[in-house]
Image 1 (cartoon, rainbow, N blue to C red):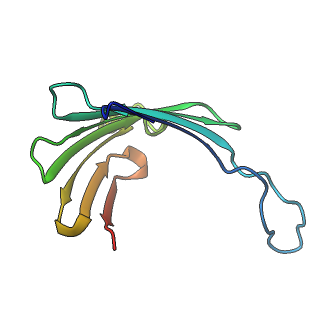
Image 2: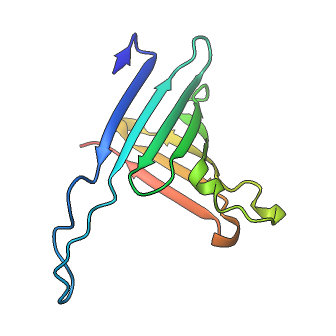
Length: 138
């Protein structure tokens, strides 16, 4: 939904149904990990920011929350930061994991609708995560 170009919201129900095929001689089909996902995002008036929030409700697990921000004043470069409760669950008592659950990154727009994105997520005992994405249109 788009409210005056500043606010967007969405809801999705993911993974409905059962497993399509089985491996080996096991003929039991397991249920898929069904999840309800709802989110909202918007651009605060007068600020070069996009703010977003998501709630993930798995039918077989705890609820997770994700928050994000994108600073776009430096176009074609975008600075991004986010936090999710799922990632913060990996925290131990170690001081090196104080940023678990956070992510930091940037994006660069190129001509003809192409974009390069990079994100870094510290993971403490699980190791850091570097994500690179290249998107574009035909």
